[in-house]
Length: 69
Image: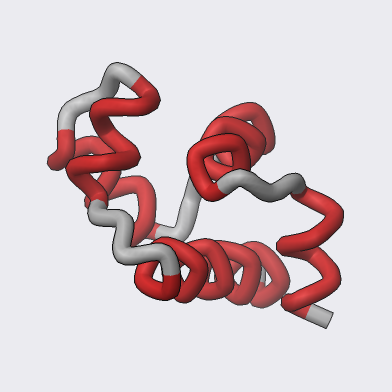
């Protein structure tokens, strides 16, 4: 769980660094903003959703994983 939490923290940092909001992610993923907020606050998301968020960030899972390590 700690690794998952760190991974999501890194994704949040990347969103902030790119000046992207949860609303931007929600629009790109065709989700509601509240669903995106919930996903990040609970720090639970399926790997497919992690890949989707990585695409929004213009990166991939491997790059985010390296930043966790």
